[in-house]
Image 1 (cartoon, rainbow, N blue to C red):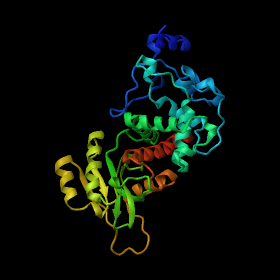
Image 2 (image 1 turned 180 degrees about the vertical axis):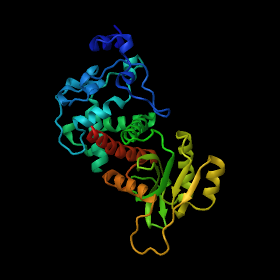
Image 3 (image 1 turned 90 degrees about the vertical axis):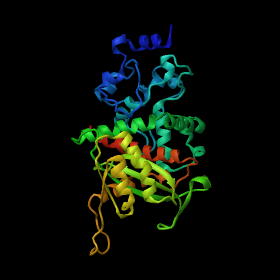
Image 4 (image 1 turned 120 degrees about the horizontal axis):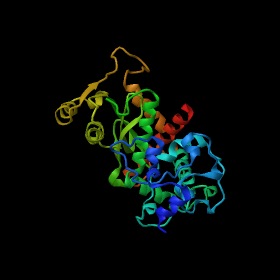
Length: 340
């Protein structure tokens, strides 16, 4: 009996009932990773939105793999997903290739525990080696899954799906039409190589710089990590190019004075973007909330609430980008769970 036939016998599904995307009413964005043909492996509890206990996890590792070989883990930390948050996140996780005959062993660890372990590192800023033992997953396994999902684009796909759902929950279209850009320099730990770190003379920070683009409600669209010595205008070219590849409807971008000059002309002629510089009033004294720009500043503050993002500890810049995406995943899943 094939793995697919075995899974069908476990679920009691016919060939027409195998697609969890159709069963759950999920719309996959054009830049997300497709889940492919699959059976509806999520239980009726997830589909109905009722609470789920960790003793009856509906992830593929527990349904078809070896996730139930270990006793269920009790939720202990504030970063662990609640039942409502897991019901939001579980249907968006990637479909494993081993269930479609693509090779590989069945998953050994519960996906909910894996997600909680990754979020613990992001939220508390610990070393991978210091992962609490109550997760009962080797830290190398958690780090390998974090790296593999990021390299395959699964982390970005889950983040983008959550962002679309948050926008729909607020009565907005799934794709934005405007964006706000800014950058933030963070200090780098000794684990950051010299090739990807630099000195920001303006902020007096030695490390890396995050170039972020957000929509009108502060949800992350693009994040690019460079050395802190890279000028805002230079880092913005990479970020804006990615924005054009992923979003077709955006026409207007708000920015501060650091992006004025040649970047405005380049973005207009090359990408078709109109960059509007929002400046601080010359008569203003002290702190002032600047229209439009405060949205991206608030997003940077949200990211800073997760300790792994306060300082850059990652050897590779793309891993720090993934940390920022996971920080926003934690925020968005919590927001959607509270809305329910």
